Image 1 (tube, rainbow, N blue to C red):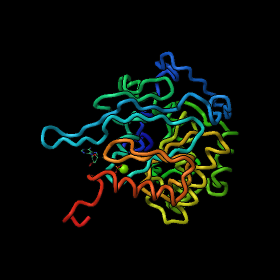
Image 2: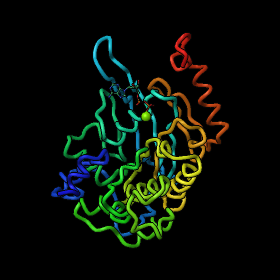
Image 3: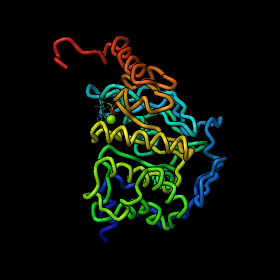
Length: 303
Ligand SMILES: Nc1ncnc2c1ncn2[C@@H]1O[C@H](COP(=O)(O)OP(=O)(O)O)[C@@H](O)[C@H]1O
Ligand SMILES: [Mg+2]
């Protein structure tokens, strides 16, 4: 079972294999989820729609116990709009990945609430979380996490097939076109550049038309030119395809591709920038260093 083994062993294991028998759509409670896997649904994903795609309320995460307790997230309240490209920006160790993992149902909160649409993620059991990740969330990671033995096309369609479905042809073609992957579909990851691999990973994250795509430092392993290209494609996915993307980054020039940058420092929301530019995003990060003593360079540490 190489497919199962490969997926299970990769960080892209979203419980898809374990959840194949689950009833699609079951267990969503009262969530008014309207999904159209046969084509783009402009009603649900219309930009500027008033109900947020994702929300956090007093969201807190601590690691460890006693003296060794790390408060990675400290009472975060934030909304992320549908149909927008939002960056979560902050220094290394500020809690960006922790926030993303909690919002995406990849890790559990210590206290507080996280919502995807009207579904309270923090109230779901493991089985429901697995289903939510499979059906309603897409992921893009720094390391691409493609399966090396499969072609680009197979990597893109795999999540849908593992969930027991078939990728919608028209949507697949739209993604391939938007992400500039035509002519690369029969290549294996090893035959693709880093930027191309990440574009395949973005197509894979979007193929099931998730409510939201989370990207954690998606350009962290790319040279600046490929990184700029990937960021442009993420932006196109939002502007032209109506997707909702939340991207974690420590890089002000990456954040400048987003419609909004939410600043985080020491596990707390520390700022919010509309239409960030590299300059305003950089200024935002610099301001954190002045305002937050524990983020600023500690004397004598040399860092
Ligand atoms: N699994 C873990 N166990 C203990 N501490 C952790 C764990 N994950 C993250 N942390 C700590 O929580 C804080 C926030 O980490 P993280 O969310 O990864 O920050 P960022 O993504 O902004 O670099 C850091 O101090 C980090 O060391
Ligand atoms: Mg991180």
